[in-house]
Length: 345
Ligand code: MG
Image (cartoon, rainbow, N blue to C red; front, side):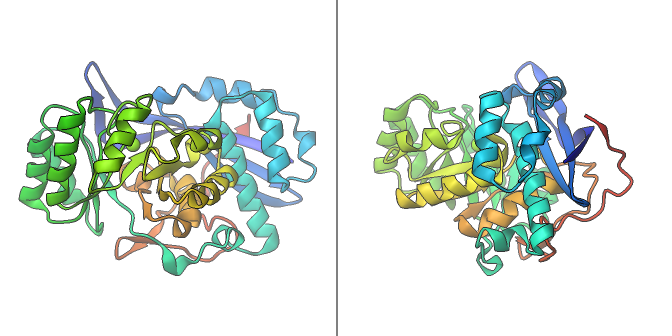
């Protein structure tokens, strides 16, 4: 197994602001693995609040004994090994997992979707995320969402209704809402759920604090709109605990350490009768194509990474009628990025 890396800053189209600081880019580690002449690409998107960085990624990679990857498609064994190396670092583990899945598909001459039994004709529409901003900028962002059939709105401040009304003044597209743990009062929260229902909102992500299981469960029992766990769910081990407390979960490859565990989570969530949203961080085409390969197994998709950023170094994924169109190439179906220079990790 040969491994090389490229550290990259993925620039956001709109700066992301919360109270005292503004983020204009996301550190990304692009990973290239070669096995018996076949090359696979992986990606770690390391948004600062998740605690990973270029430094923690190289520290983790330095600990890996690559001779353990003689049979690189025994995903269960590989993930067990990676979790023994260190318990955290899900994004850099995702980069390794995605690259191995890409190689696996290329060797088998199957797309990753085919390998996971995902039928491209069941691809859900993907949403376009509108972050918290001034009404003028929000209107600009809505205008940028050309081709998208659903918008995802970040809420959780005291002007939630105003924000939705701003969107509604310029768009009648269906909406997903992400409250990002911003609601704390049950009565206000349930009233909001009914109001949002009337506004054409189809799902609500993480209304209350991730540790407030009772509050979120109370809302789930009463809400006319599905309540989805995001921050409350990281790895597959968290899922059992959330059964019955949420209608569904938001799976992101950067939380689940890649495609293998995301697929396991999909199967487990289905066995609990839960709905599934597959989401993303600020990501290039690599990680969003990996998410798209699993998306037909899910109810909703939020794989807008390449459209919210300015310098995706690969060809943009193809989208038609608001849905990813998988190109059926073996592996991830990634194109472009040929001028990127990878170096030893
Ligand atoms: Mg969220």
